[in-house]
Image (cartoon, rainbow, N blue to C red):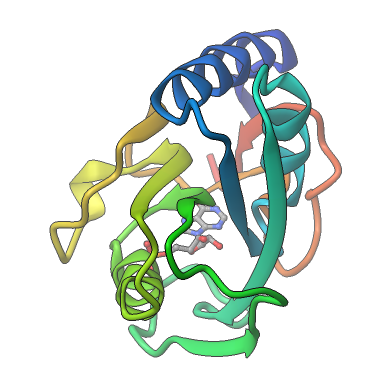
Length: 168
Ligand code: IMP
């Protein structure tokens, strides 16, 4: 495995994103993390956030155990509180084809939040199948399958503190 982003690179960028998000949400922000991949990003982002924030979680199925998108997204776990009238930031690990995020944004927008924005640690623009708005992007990467910092391959490697490329 080859390290693509070191622990230090990630921590610096996550702090910048937290400051940017806090600046854009002076009344506080409700972070909605997408399980399982975003759990590490969410925990670092929330702890680096200078302003008020609350957190909630959703789980969706997208890829099963493979490495390519089926385009089929299903809600496995829904939020535990209402988002109507609130400032929401979806916290995602990675936008690849964009299908999962598009679906999530549609679901949450239908619940009438005041603002709905999205933070993704990683983006692979060359893989995009749908154009999806992402206001906060940590790093733009090439079309490589990556693991670590919450991201898995068949449920492995989520605990790595850095991001690495597998299959090279
Ligand atoms: P999308 O619907 O194709 O944008 O896929 C988004 C989801 O696929 C992410 O939330 C990840 O769970 C997973 N995914 C996409 N690319 C990778 C990768 O390189 N490594 C690990 N998981 C990935």
